[in-house]
Image 1: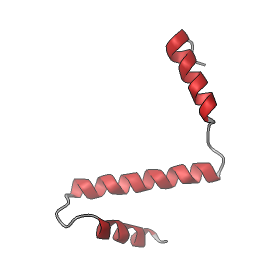
Image 2 (image 1 turned 120 degrees about the horizontal axis):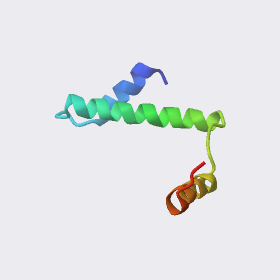
Image 3 (image 1 turned 180 degrees about the vertical axis):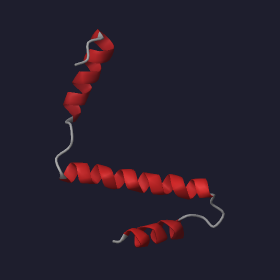
Image 4 (image 1 turned 180 degrees about the horizontal axis):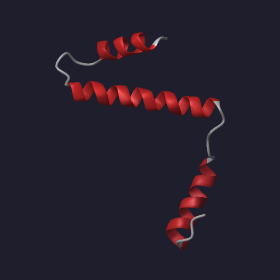
Length: 65
């Protein structure tokens, strides 16, 4: 789907009385989701267990790597 079509679809889903800030927020969310999906497709992810261990070391022991 082309960008213009995605924006039009988003605008069609938003209420008629939405603000420009509402539109910008929703466009930002769509953009971030697309970036995240691209990261997954390209293998740029970190396993949940790695993140949990990193945070545990950081907050429990104060020694993040």
